[in-house]
Every structure is written in structure tokens, then in C-alpha cells.
Image 1 (cartoon, rainbow, N blue to C red):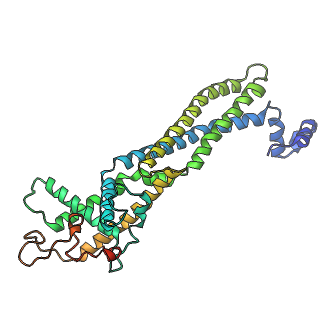
Image 2 (cartoon, helix red, strand yellow):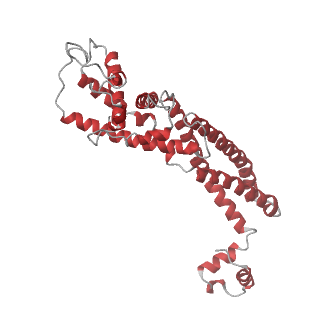
Image 3 (cartoon, helix red, strand yellow):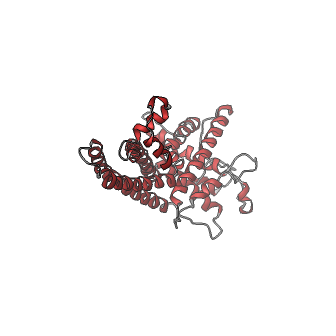
Length: 331
């Protein structure tokens, strides 16, 4: 809204009574008397907004860094991956895809696509039930009152509570998925370029002002402080981005551009599926009658069937004939 040259000249050449002018014109007449007024205002705006911009970027970088640590350190997430690899190897045991030691993380989102004969139970539910069982037994064995075979209903309740908390272990991963790295990067670059503009204004227009200038002194101090902060922020951007890329390589054999950010999005979407599956299991447990306490292990006694070999991976699967041709229908 700064007046153009023609408007500015009219204001400067006005010789009448200022009281006859409107408030805006009166204000501008005083403002244009100030040396480089709009350059000063531009500097002041940058000075007032810099710390907020720096804080926002630093918080985002911190979120990315903690998210990487969460992914690497989450015991439950590793358990999920182990369970998926196990059942994947079982399904593909007679194919060239069997014997895998890792999975492509995107495949986690496909677990709900493989459904059982009831049309509701998915491979995700099978993985979840296995984790519930193993975590329930682990927690029961650590109980000071643990004696003998733990009650199945108790194990399921405790195990479900544990595995439902995987989202808490990956809280910053979910936050990172909602951050736009392009915007953060452009913000850091903009701060660096804008600071150079302010520095140029200081070294040319502001230093041309003769005599004592309090604004010049304040701006010199600000530029000296801001240069170090903006430079450090740029270094942090590179460090955190490298950390994100390195983390992505732990889950993607060949990391492409922006694969690191996709990593967070995939895990976030998987956690939404996981929470829904946990809710399904909880609701099913609430309407199911209590199980009778186990007397012996499955397969004991006369006339018992040969245990399904999948039971060592997923004991919840009852004895049934293994039919590889229909594996994609079984849960």
C-alpha cells in the first residue's frame, strides 16, 4: 500500500493545511519523511516473525528425528513385522517367495485385503491374534502370581491391552506423516534468502543514513544473531533429512526420493487399520462366552488329528487340512 512515485510527489509538494487531508494522507506525509521507511518496515516484519518461523521448523525437525527413533526402537512394531514375515513364508512356502527375511512395508496395508471364508476375518486379524496370544503369555509369565498354564481369557485381555498400545510407541511417526517436508524446506530456504535481502538493505540504504541511527544499531545486532540461527537451521534440515532417508533404507531396499516421508505415511495408515482390528477383537471378545480352562495341549489323547503345521506360528488356528491352493481364502 506504499504510494507510487506520482502519489508520493503529490504528498511531498502539498503546501496546504494538513488538517484538510484525510487520516491516511496525513499519516503517509509523516511516513515518507522517514529515510527508507518501507525498507525499515520490511526489516521489522522479518525481525518480528523470524523466531516463530525458527521454532516451527525446529519442532518439525524434532518430530521427524524422534519418529525415526520410534520406528527403530519399537518392540511391538518389530513383533508385527516378524509375525507378518512368518505367515507370509508359510503361505508362500512352496513358491520362490518363501523364506523371506524382510517385507516391503507397503505390504502391511494389504493385510486386510486377504480375507477368510467368513468374509470378515482378514490376515491382519490373524497377525493381531498371534501377537495378542504371545504378548498375553509373556505378561502372564512375568506376573508374580503366575503358576502353570495361564487362563486364555486373561491372556487375551492382557495381550490385547499391550498390542493396542503400539500407536503410543509410534506417536511421532503419526505426527510426521502429517508434516509437509516441502513446505518446511521452502521455509528454511526462504529465511536464508530473506536474511540476505535484509543484510543488503543494512549494508546499503540503512548505513547511508547520516548521524546516530538507533534502528541501524538494532538491525546490525539482529543480523549477526540471525545469521547463526538460520545457518544452524539449514544444517539441521540436512541432518534430519539424511536421518529420515537412512531410516527409510531400513525398510525399503532401494530408497527413492521422498521414500522416507512415504515411510511415515504407510505406518500411520497401518496403525489406523491396526486400531480398527483391535476394536473388532475387543468387541468379539465382549460377546463371546468364557472359554473352559484348558486341560491339555491340542492334539493330546486318542483319536486326535495331526496338528496343522501352522499352529507353531498361529496356535489359534484349529486343526484343519492344509490346502495350499486355498491358502488365500484361509485366515
